[in-house]
Image (cartoon, rainbow, N blue to C red; front, side, top):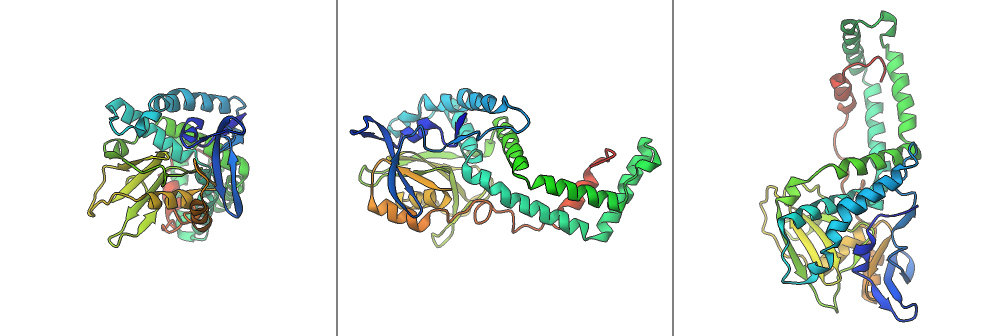
Length: 338
């Protein structure tokens, strides 16, 4: 089955009525290709996107839950967000909080970023294996666990056993099958989470004119931190100081959320150009608009993909993980095998 990374209803907000086809269409912008048109039904739709390699019914379950529990409640009032007199109720803001969270986690850019996250994990495993002191400490700790649990002595782990098991896990971990499995599990996990920091923040909508519309990308939820000099730093976690969260909800309206975090800078209202550049920068491959514009195409050609998720945005590579595997294994209760 085909699954959408961005809900059709949200994409339709940016569609125009095509007189030739007598249908709703999106102007599609992508790197190195002249603007084309695409239907909201086809845009961001992928075969088996939420498929679980071990459970053939899982994709349908996820699609059904996403649609019934998280998309439809928001889609009932989505078109009203462009009305300047419309005010969100508390329930609607809670529904939008779920919607925003899942827009981020289901995006193609974040799914693709799992390759980078896995690379960092594999580096951490290699660092642990090269640290003889940490290896011996884990062996000693797990040996004690085994003795106190009553396991026979021949089940005790040796240095070779741990390295062999870690290498086996590393080979399995970096496969496409495992990436898909972990992606599906993350979607299910985030369907059960609620982001109070986002929900309790300051929410507002700002607007533009038909001559200068917002665009939307295939990774539409963007975050940034505005520095003292006005420069924008992309890909800030929604719980980090000074973070701002933005989502265009129509060509004329953009949601601007200031999560409830520490702030030490004056907040400026973003410009349409800043929002559109961020949409292009976070895009995996495509941006969409209700108009065909040389200015939009030129901007997309210059900016698309610059905030590569996992590398330049929401990157974990800069952190020090040299003790991560060691600390995890020391905290784990031994279960006879990893």
